[in-house]
Length: 158
Ligand SMILES: [Zn+2]
Ligand SMILES: [Zn+2]
Image (tube, rainbow, N blue to C red):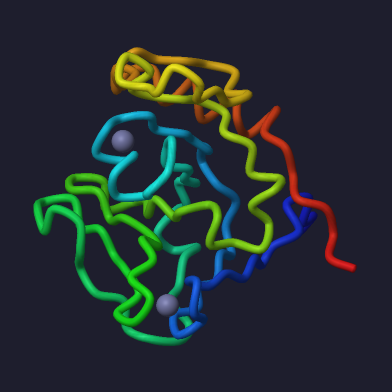
């Protein structure tokens, strides 16, 4: 099988106590400008890659629930408290991995951006598609297909 995405990918939290591995290509890469993401990521926007659940694994450490402790489960390193990934409610087939945890982050260019109605005036991303809120669920099939064709691939290691 060809490995154009140069998987697997390795990642970790800030302190390294929690390590993760990705073995399936992302379905979509996203930046979210909502004020919740701004606060939780301590940044201008959050940055994530939707990874099929079977292609994501915590290899070291025990992440804990943080954020809103609500139906969308936000996982953090128990020591450095880095927000690492989210298991969204009702979407058991994917995990939203915070792209900056991965060594390949520089290639995981956000393909869509969401909640631009809440964005900081100076915060811009190179996303191909922008949405004031979130795209309608019916748009995702086309977005995922477009990303599979055009999303930027991380280079081979070394
Ligand atoms: Zn940590
Ligand atoms: Zn958000």
